[in-house]
Image (cartoon, rainbow, N blue to C red):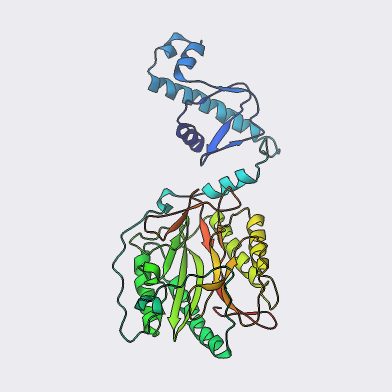
Length: 402
C-alpha cells in the first residue's frame, strides 16, 4: 500500500474516486499500467470538484485542501485494501488490458530501475599526461595532418610482415583492455582509470593512440550509460549500476591495435544486462560474416538483425574502419543494414565495433557535447559497444585482439 500511495502522490494529482469495483491506473516510473482486475469506471476530481460532489457531510466541505486530500487518500486507501484482499481468493492472473507495442516496450525497458545518480554530467578534465621521449609517437602527434579518406578509396592488403606487427600490437591492446576492465568499480573516476591505463601502456613501450588524435586530450575513451562513444575521462566517480565502455588503442612499432568492451559497475539492472548481451552478440555474429570474397554489407545487416531482435537501435553514422600504420583508414564498415557492394579480401584488416542503444527508433538520435568529442543519446537510452580488430584470411578471419 505504501507503493500505491507513493505512486498516487507522485502523479501530482488528487487521488481517483473509486466506485464499487475499482478501476485503477498505477504509475510506475512514468508509465501507466492497467490491470484487468481493476476495470470498472473511475473519475478523477480536483478539490473543488470533490467539494461539489461530496454529499456525505458538511464537515468535509470545510476542510482545508491539505486535510481534504488526506481524507480522500485515507478513504480510497481503505477501498483499495479491501479490493486487493478480495482478490486473494481467486487464482486468476492479472494481465494488461492492452498489449504493449514495440515502442512502449522499449520505453519501459529504457526507464527500468534507473537511478538519477546514473545520469551522466560532464566533469573536470585534468591536464594531458606526459609521454617519455623514448616512446615512438604516431605522425599526427608530431604535427602531420590526419589523413581524411573517402568511402571508395583503396583498401590496404597487408603483407606478412605487417600482419605480424599487427598481431603484436593487437595482443598488447587486448591485455591493456583486460587491465582497464579490472579497474572498474564503484567510486573510481574515469580520470583515475585513464592515468593507470596510460602508465600501463607506457610501461609496454607503446603509445596511447587517442592522445593527441585531432586534439583528443586523453589516452583512452570512457563512455558511460547514455554516452555512445568518445567519452573523455574526467573526475566523475563511477556510480553503482553504471555501465562503461572502455576503448583502447595502442601504437607500437609503427602500428595501431584497437579494441573495446563494455563493463558493469557493481550490480546492473536487467535492461542493462540485456543491452550488453545484445551488443556483444552483434559483434560476434558480425565476425562470422568475415571471409575472403564476402560483402562488407553482410556485417551491417547482421548487426541490424540483432538490434531489431532485441528492440534496440544503431547509430548509422559510426562505423568500423581499416587500421594498420594509419589509425582510421578504409574500409569504412557500416554497422547497420546497407547495400554497399564492397568485397572483403584476404589480407585486409579492419575493426568491427557495433554500438547498440536503447531507443524508440531503429536508428539512434545523438548529440555532441561542447567538448566536440562526447556523443550521447538524445533520448537518454543507455548504450553498449564491443570492438575487435579483424584480419581477413583465406578460410575466414582471425580476431587479432582476442
